[in-house]
Image (cartoon, rainbow, N blue to C red; front, side, top):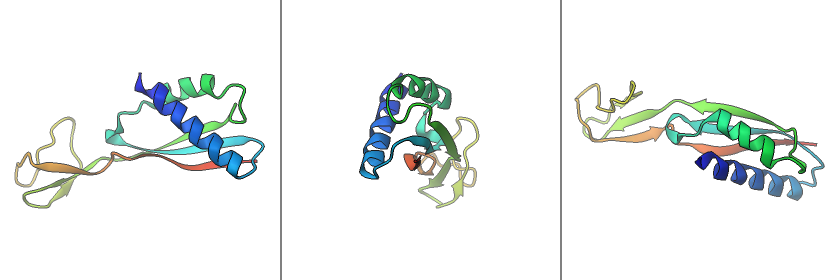
Length: 113
């Protein structure tokens, strides 16, 4: 359900930047979403279609770029891509790991007319 608030934020950001650029229409929005961001593309698209109605963003295409998750071990400093829900370091077995890629969520660019 948090996708509703996320989608509203995407719309607000897009409308603000489009207005600042003097745009008449928003054609597309390019989003970068990390694997660990827990954002569901289909839910964002669903809410987008409703929230953007009646604005200059109505009909804009959402483009989703996914970033693979990466973790780094605090003990041995090895970086790895976790498999499933096992976040233990495959090199030393440590559970002391941190996300180094994959928690991103941002509006990367907006295509306007």
